[in-house]
Image 1 (cartoon, rainbow, N blue to C red):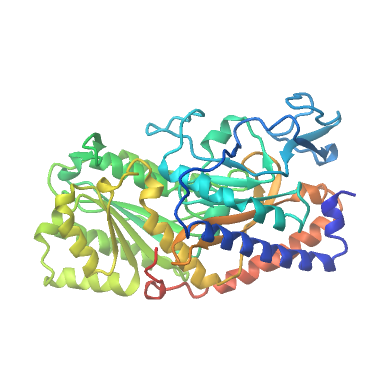
Image 2 (tube, one colour):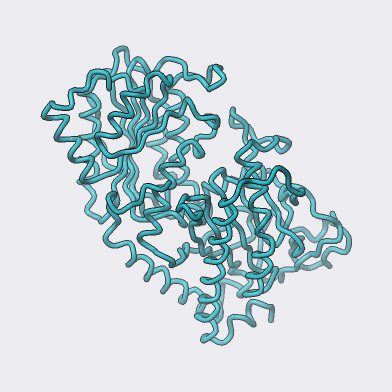
Length: 490
């Protein structure tokens, strides 16, 4: 009987161990928040790269062959390090002396490049999370070092995991924690998101970085940012996309519900029509006017009203803001839709516009009690998910209001690195100013509880206990939090 089987027998031990895991994830999330309370040190020691080989002294952990694990990480024949496993088993090489770290290595053109150096936000995350190794060591005693993964994902997409391990597959360099179920589950709550994309003629102009270099048209960048949002949604949320501006009206469509995908949790085929709509949007010949904007908001509320579930309502708009120059805030239709926004939803305005044009969009944001950022003025403009940090911070703050200090348990799903079926407990992390900095997660490999097929009392008991916790956490989100309850700290 392996270590986890011992831990979870008899049934009475399951609840106790899950309670210990709850305390462990709370400690890890708290420590991640504390790591962002102080300035990043001017230098820090090297970290073990998850995408590079571990030292030859690292230990190989053997998984019984009857679990039939088909993994990119396991190999009994490829002896890359000294004294690896014997035959007739699957294995992964790990070290309990240090963690491993990974950052997103996708360049501005979307190419995965293992040799790409980290950007400033990534360097900061690597350095700050290095402080967590002692915490990893401490909480890992709950289940035993080698059968459970402990990790944190930060707002730049980096991940630090313990015990340290190696993965030299193509998947490694492309790993982005912000697109994984632990991260999105850790900041999830019942959410209905509508994305609005301005297609007026002014969106055809070039977007510029702070250095003055062109980065494609404003519409092309809006498409890139909107597409990236589609990879961060969580199960049971609703999503919709409307384009507006330049006349011609806005064709209506119902919102789509995000479904669960066991084999690839970040892939949602049901959203493909919306993704196609985003990338196929073209510039209109005429400029966007205030009436177009008002129509877009009214269509958004129509979509909201077709879903009867209790959901928080959020709207994200990408625009150059040219229409704000002629908005009449005393116009009856404008007043009516602004009052709806203020009472029912939260509006996130992401401007793709020269800094000189900020004033109109900032005024609009103030009028609707929304949030505004000019993406063109941000140094991380090429990193969409970092640039839209206000939205994800808002989600995390909403999650915190609903869940309090109760961790979030995901559904069982297939691990990114093909270790096997796992379940994750996750929790958002905030610094002392209540600013969202990332998500802490702990994975439990279900195959270590025994085979999924046939009679397996230990695994069944564990699944039932986690299912009860998931049912309880669902009750915490009803009714969904309202915008007025969310603190402006993100």
